[in-house]
Image (cartoon, rainbow, N blue to C red; front, top):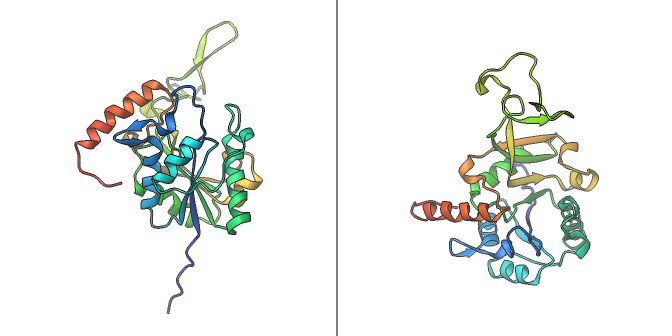
Length: 244
């Protein structure tokens, strides 16, 4: 009889600090009838492989909304990890260390930024599966087809102010289709091994796998314009039948 692989203990985290300057109150601003953060909580709770959803925040209002929609907020993020200049990587470490101390070791860390409300359950499960199936991988990120290419239509200026391609090709490229394929990183989901986050200083120190998502699920809300676009997309989605 075949032995079943042990189930990996997977915990999802949503890192949502207060004090957003681009879109004040962004993480709990209403989108399609519920606070922005609630969309991420709902998808995480719909994933069968995720044990629980923990929100890391320094803001009491965000904490209250997160609990209302079914997430745990078992700690308040320290102020020094919630400033504009604070690397989120350090907040990731803080959350992992808290869970390991209070609830024991776990196998997979998943981050679902509140600013990416249009992901679906399969996007998240695909990241978890990609990491679980590759023991050599440290982290899985989501990507989409890039809108611009450093080999074709992205430029930098030289000291005299003249433009040149970011990455000059070895041979002339006259069509974008002939340039090397590049991708944009999205904020749809991240899945990583806790041990990697605790020892590394950033994503690109590790062995990275990717999951490709379509652009309609990859919007990252950072500006008022992004939020306006999200509201327009939400109206279209509301008129269609679909599942998280």
